[in-house]
Length: 472
Image (cartoon, rainbow, N blue to C red; front, top):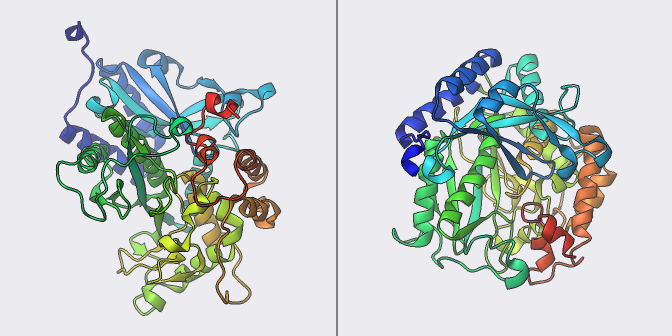
């Protein structure tokens, strides 16, 4: 009966061209009304599309997806609602209804062999009942802050993320950890070393093809230091696009892995004794064609503006640590024995520094925040870093001695909760986040110890579901 289904299937080359064109429209700030008109006309005219996947991200950083029948969506795009009380960190039961707007500029064509034929994806915006932005939708917060800075100062926030992950044998390996108590590598090859036909290399090749087709503008990909670990790099983009790409990167990796009876895992430290997963975040700010972070004769090749940006982030390193390392498991990664970026300092060479200053030129000069784990909410983390780098407090005196980030989530929650800066930065949202993280932490042993504990996987925000959460 499959011949009766005439759903959209597109070549990877055509898809890449369409997705890059849509990305260019976002970068060039084409007015939203023009983009919306074009997208809705396209959906109306393209009869082979059956559904539109609308996605949003909760406060902890977990991606949620709803599939809308295309015809229904076209009629009801301005009146979509969902139950916010079912999403951790969103509404209470007594005030559950939230609206879902559509960011038509963040529109993606999806490879049919990975996501199924006849579907496209668009990012949503969580709204209050009156249509105003919902306070816990950090994507909207990042979007509005970026737009405000562009209008007020002409700033464009530039970003690229280096996202590491593991590939483990079996589907749902994280959820199954409760029963198995272990993760199984698909290969024990090392850094840059994976034979062309082995499972890790096949996964990387396929995921990179999907990534390219979705308009990421690939640069390089390779196995990482730890067994079964990978990283696929792509070009920098404006901050909101880059944050969307973090979510899409993890989504496509998980989907490609699942098709191969494997699991793509972005826990910061799923296996002890080997390197963990980071999400090194390269940042710069430009004004027009000028990279404001570059100064040829500046210290380490960056400008005073960039150094002030770095010093503000370091000054608030303890305040914002929970945002960048938001799970119990994340604090295993901040272990200095495995190249951990746990020292609150900046350096061009020391990879144990929270911030590194890579070699750059007038186009590529940037700062690299290394202490972010890949399970952080990318919108919250990126907003926090740019907001702090521009508007945080400069230190009154140089940081002296070896000052390190916390080695456990409890100290991090305490620093976060008592911080006046966090209160000003996030308000009620900060209180909600601290409560969520405390609830998860209280289900885990207080001391990490040397072995991965079942609870730190089971109650992790990217792993837990209602069944696992209630199995306590």
